[in-house]
Image (cartoon, rainbow, N blue to C red; front, side, top):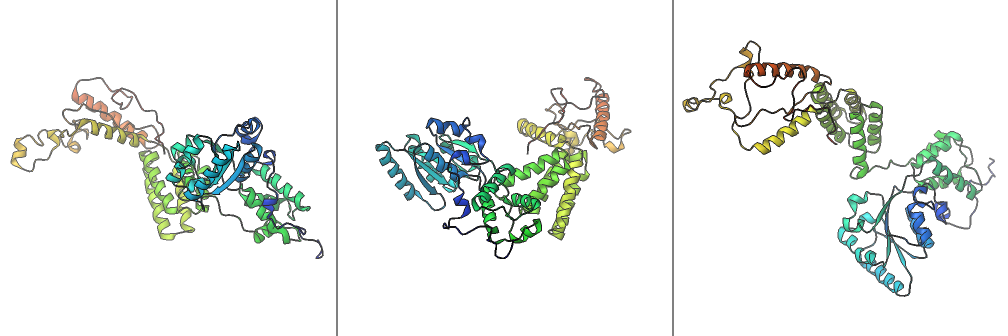
Length: 457
């Protein structure tokens, strides 16, 4: 382009932002939400039948929630009443409800759109109930937060929840093409820069249009580096106190549990890039080492504690490499929840058995009275026995022997299982009765053997 060439955006009589000028005027123009808006989809059928139910639109920023609500009102001949939970209170709601009641008396319905509905407190949410219940309003709430956590049950039971998707590459490309058609020029970007532009938008159509509008003064073609200098990439959609925080730590945890170091590193990087506190991750790695690996690799917990210590000494970004190293170690370590499961069984048994005393032979007898009562009588010091194992009973006298810990064949637990089978044979020989435990290893009280399983997250 020459210096005299017009800018990317020619003179326009309107001062409205590009995102507003390109706002869809029909549901068919909305991109990325076909699973909800297509003629045979849930919302599409409601519109075609003119029978709109109250609903909550849950999705990330810039996916079309406000536009969809406005078009739903137009498509079903309802008066559109928009409110923002950020700036509105009970007094504003009362005015809307009163106006809706008056319209209803003359046969006109009202669609009340509440943006950021999760910001209303429980009492404010309860104020919707009678008006939604009797049909005075059709409530359409928009939220970026999980409705299960942010909205009360009474309101959720009266609304359908629809999940909107972040815009994928196909949808974002459509948005770019519409913008180029509206401005009458192709964006001054090479092929790689166009891909970078889509990545910068991170699924947010409105943000993408704002980026395009920022290119209005550009006269020369840009490569990815030039684009990065001109516009700033948006911060990742990650809230350290909301659902995204828990979703990503769950993904990291389960990737390590599934022995996938590549996926685990990806979710670690996503959390760090989103601003997560590395010490929170370090604490979760220690938990994982104890819970999902345990004795299958006794070094796992030491690796986790070492990563924690290194990060505290070095800080970011150098200390983050120690956390990454630990993530790879834990993901590739053998897994076992035998200790976790055994502790849960022991806790149940402890609650059920009450305050049973330990058997007298394993009690210390520091006084003559205690010796006269039989404390310590008959106790065998295992290291002094020929086999290094006495086979004595250590459970309460009134409690039958139970098996809580059942080692797996994973990692170091294979050796532990062999030792426990040997001890089971020696215990059997010492008792002189009961079934021979053979070589099948320890069993639980119902005779079954553990085959592993998930302990949740």
